[in-house]
Amino acid sequence: MQRTIKVTISLPEDLAKFMDRLASQVHRPRSQLFADLVDEKRRELLRHSMIEGYQALADENKQFASEAMPISAEVWEEVDES
Image 1 (cartoon, rainbow, N blue to C red):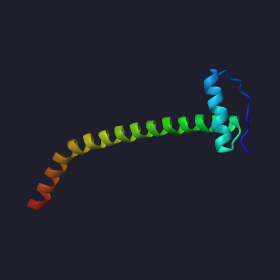
Image 2 (image 1 turned 180 degrees about the horizontal axis):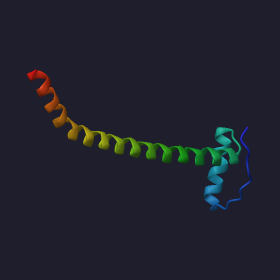
Image 3 (image 1 turned 90 degrees about the vertical axis):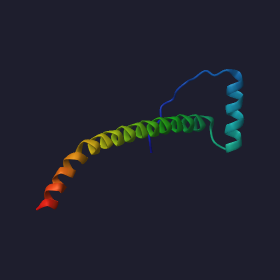
Image 4 (image 1 turned 120 degrees about the vertical axis):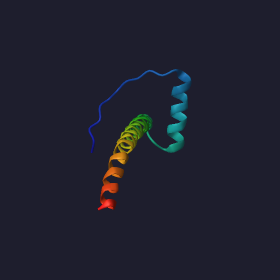
């Protein structure tokens, strides 16, 4: 089991009441609800970072392919001629 630490936060009254109602509705302790929400945000940021990384990699691959295609076409012309 993951180690936990205690964190104290202050919320505006309306948000605190909302969190209490939500925790009651989903039958979870308020602290678990906060942890779930923060974890959800962490996953969202990780997913966004991965998407950016894959898009950058795709752009690099596209650039490489555009540079390599003329060279490979020359090689294939030489193969066809032999």
